[in-house]
Length: 529
Image 1 (cartoon, rainbow, N blue to C red):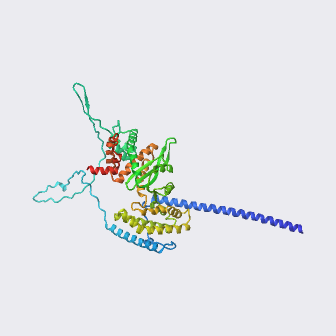
Image 2 (image 1 turned 90 degrees about the horizontal axis):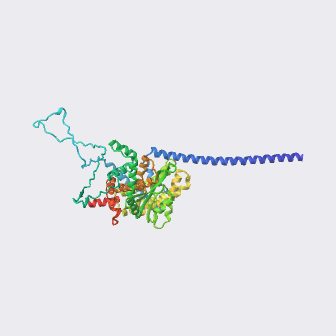
């Protein structure tokens, strides 16, 4: 009997052990399954966010300005924000004033009606007369002619080519002791029949109107001029080389500024060794006080090794997006990093479909900061007046918004769209809020992004640069095109004049090439006129 009891106990123990192993195995499998399910749900959420973002980019509105459907969303929620009484009061006052001024601005905008601009008076006019039907001849005794009905139509004809013959007369003494010849006329490119106007037209076609050279060749051919692709590519390279000293002088001038906006964008490059298009990058520096732009290309790299030597001696305010390369300037003496509210706003815009309540609130507060800037622009405030307006209206909202970020972040999923938006904004909030310190500082980096936009349009047309050298040459042309656009200078007029006169600076080192920079060129032109 004892033996049977012992065997029974052993069997029970074996079964219990086996059951325990099965239970532990089940728990491990369940834990692994839950982990995989969680990872899959996170991946699905991420993919849904990407799809929603792409849909907005392709089918949505291009404007990033947020306008809430419910006007009550403009009210601030002070619960749990731990604002001091005076902070809460100043924030409410700021919101009320911003809302009131916004309503007033809307009323004034509704009153304004668009007007068609008249055609320029200096354009040649060709008159075409029409008379009553049946060629009626009116007897002056019976009829009095009234003022005619006049309408104007703008006509256009394709551009034309012509040849400028340069005749240098020669004279010789009858005793053949001396020969005199008219001085040589300098052309932009040595041993080339390309004039400054033709070179300017080619560069404008590609870098202003975004027409690749092969399309321009077809256009010229329809007019009756055949130009070989190799010839035009050679002219492009030679033109960029001719302008390169001025390009380096532009870089010196811009880096002497005390307020820069910096950004970078892609520029596809064909690598000769692989014969494949790779994603390169081109950097853009914009001096806000000087209103000048400089594009820099360095083997298509976006790495820290490019920006370090470029900004090695820069001192002043540096406005950028949240790219980690710029984080090092937070600790550099003499440099004040500024953030970009447009990038922060974009993050909340992307999270609007996932967490409408929080994203709408954030966009509303950012919208009020922008409304202060629009008011300053409308009233044409000075830098000092703009700074005072920001201190009174923007600063209370900045304080309240920062406390809202701190309160909300622990309550959202870190990898969700709203979590990423709040994290991104809070981590650079010290840089985002600094713009209110000086009336010269901009609320965002949009001036830099606007300067990059022509490059993005060109990228869609000519698709890529043939090699790194071509990309460097493109940086030269884009720099001067951007400067002309910022200075409101006609690029064709500027380039023709510069190409015709730049050789006069070859051997005269008392002259400063900076005289040719669009802003200075514009000033000198007005003085001479």
